[in-house]
Image (cartoon, rainbow, N blue to C red; front, top):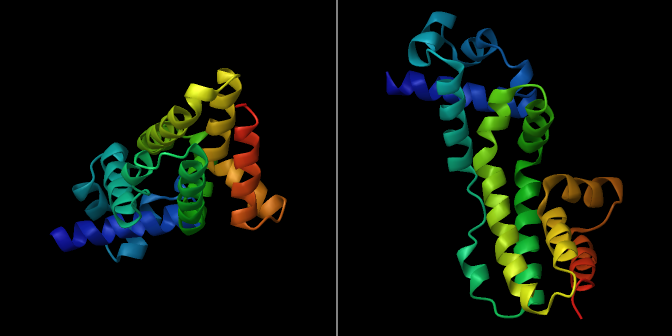
Amino acid sequence: METTRRRITQAAVELHGRIGPAQTTIAGIAELAGVQRHTVYRHFPTEEELFAACSSEYWGDHPWPDVMPWKEIGSPSDRLTTALTALYGYYETVEQMLTNALRDAATVPLVERSLQPFTGYLDDVAAILIDAYAPQATEPVLLKAAVHHAVEFPTWQSLIHRQGLQPEVAVTLLTRMIESTTP
């Protein structure tokens, strides 16, 4: 029973990553998992339960970078560089899933809700980075906006794919932008 449930969850994760949550159907999940549709419904009576299992599976296999070591870095610039380098490396590994999920979140409220833990994580990352610069920030509003912009997935996509920057160059650019809000 647990094996079947896991196959269904893994099929949902695969389809969400390949075509996106909005285009994923119960029939498609059942086919990929090698079960009947009613089996999917028996294990996951509601979409919320299926999304919860899918999110848990995916984030469990792709844990977010650990923020705790960043808090120990005293230099604001070093903290920022370390955090953005780790975050941008992470984005590279989860790009397709985040692209699909963020696209579909605009039209599927369940997808938007399933992303709330991740957006909360990004808020935590931003807070850790803002705290490092806050004592010397002359423009706290600009600092906050710049840091939040820097940690966002679409910012990474734009700099890496649209602008063709190497990750370390993107990190340098954003570090300079953020540091321009401090003396």
